[in-house]
Image (cartoon, rainbow, N blue to C red; front, side):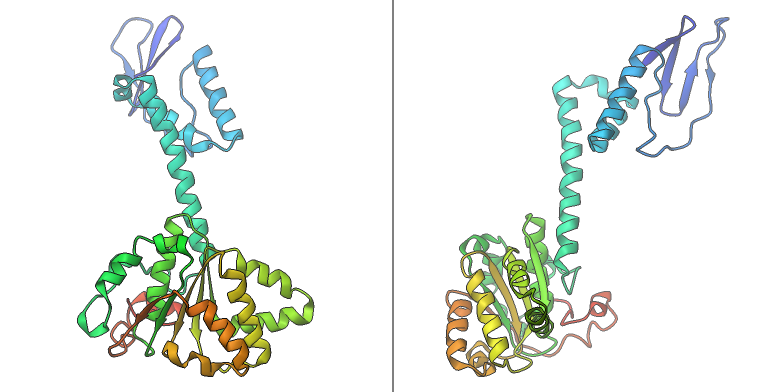
Length: 308
């Protein structure tokens, strides 16, 4: 509860409105509660110099784009129980509110930029049933995401519809929540983009863009043969990312057959040596899960999003 002074009489603040004593000393008159205000317009209703200083502080916080700190400051001013806390404790809550808001905003930006094909996928929901041939120990090891710092790729293979894209998206989601940058591409569309970039002079710029993310997810590798140009493009990507980031690649073909996808076998050797060497591998089995989860919202995003 915070008080100001008006005409020699105290003005008290309650969560449900104002309580003001009349000049005659009669019972306090309770005003009707004010409608909920936006964060931009909220002001502490304390009259006099104190109220002016508080509102100036809120204005300055808004100008510095610290609106959440202002909101938390107002919340504390309106909550009498906060008086029991020390200045350090209250200031800590103000800083925590601003940090949490900025952290959540950053995660939202990273998830949006990642363009995960299965945005709702998360590691906690991976189905570890025996029919899927998933190594529980490996999944547990990978779930801490420490392997990102070792620049070791993750290869997820085998039949269509078993959840390869979903699992790749789950790891991408986990990385975003750790503050990592993720980018997702279908291999066929990415190679088409690179071909167009060669013709319009932006090839180098696109390669530089592909080098930036901490995780580059390449979905549906091996659906089409790679001609000489596409083979070299993929080799450039693998070369650029060998020591700067991780790739997660999904494919229906087993890794042992990837060499046959390349028309240029020399380039295939160089590319696969960079991608496959030291990588983690998840080889899924079992029937297609797409029909089983056809009614789920995740399947509508495209790709192999039939629940991991």
